Length: 267
Image 1: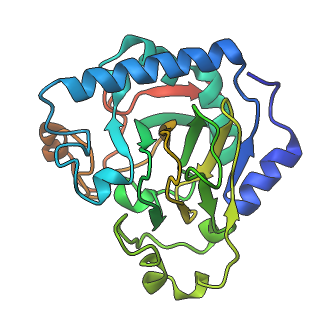
Image 2 (image 1 turned 60 degrees about the horizontal axis):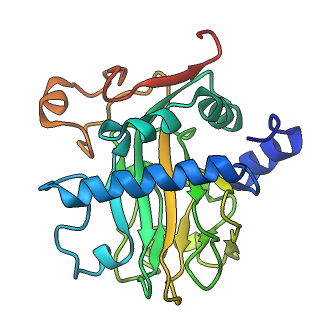
Image 3 (image 1 turned 180 degrees about the vertical axis):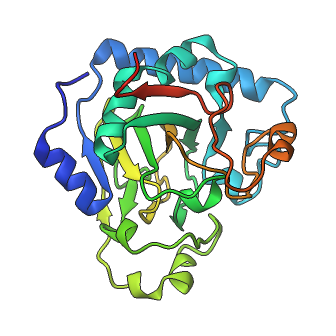
């Protein structure tokens, strides 16, 4: 991993809502992320799992946007070690300007050959907490290019976003029915070589193009929640028993469901 963030990188992230950091992982680190992701996804898809993957109906539009497998750190020890790395947590917290950071969920996002585009959307409105400081990392396990579906952003939209959203569906521009004022913001692509890391705010508008190649475009991601965030009433990925135990306004601090990975005042 590279040296600590520069002031310029922090300013860029906070102004635009995203940042691409190339060469974040060296060759050995990238190989480990690839190995753990491949193993964890294979285990998940090979088991009779009805939740935490979108591949139960593989011929649907959404299943062909990407193969999605969530919370792989729960089932794969190697992935858990990578996702729980406090050095990564510290970088996310520093970019977001928060004191402590918890894992919301990790997920593999593998866009298949000839895969569908990912329509414009926001992340945080899906989740069980509302925060303008939520942050996600997106690790390029393969070169992410304009041809195979790299990420695109509408810079600065995290500053004016509400907690309204559009689904990831066939209509690429559905989000602009919710936020018509964003329609003329010039999108910015984020192509990057394998081993790069992309960070983005949970309220910045983002999308991905189709995969026009014959090879998969693999990415491993993790969404993080600021320490101290509270329940907003949405279940999202919360287990039923935990969801039923919560009241709106309760702090989401369960050490299993939302583990703390870094805090400036704790080791």
